Length: 265
Image (cartoon, rainbow, N blue to C red; front, side):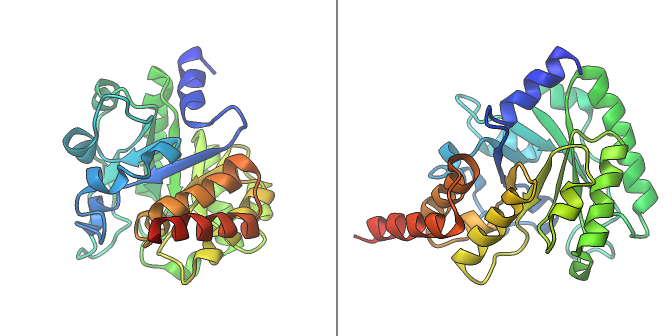
């Protein structure tokens, strides 16, 4: 691995080997997602607790202050929307030259294993890895499931993670599942947990994040479970305590409650 690649990875993965990514790229297929209508305003109170920001080039240029910005993981795939026929029908939407112009630390795209567009999205990954290797920019593959949430099981997601690593991704973002170690144990590159739709309770978030960290994940890429929470600062502080402070789910939840109560006084 060349110096530039190592340097960029060190920007998003901290010295303890863990990471906390804050995604705000949802609008690329969902449009103005609830509480993300103005992404620049949404992240202001919470960005200090994130290690990197996951976003599109449009939001980066329009809404993110370039002075003192967190490292950027740039989403470079898309081409479909919630009102289209198939969310899996993605292509590469951003050139490597634009990623270089934006001085990003990594580039990310979705792969839809098992869908009608499996071959297409894996070709996207292969092409992006070639370009990333040429210029020293790491690629993060997102194991997307589109609307087929029933695919979120150990066998399917473990398969996705391994295939993405085989194609050259330097990291894989995937959903947490029961027996999470079966996926991380079979993936030779770092695995980062996605959040998915907002959970039913705050404790539930801390529990699955803690479990995943104990079973081989290096961190999280959580958006909606943070900025759609009524107390986003308290939530991100609790998650940060698990990822970088080795807190348990119970300890993180206690911190969340304490911070939430401070805000309410």
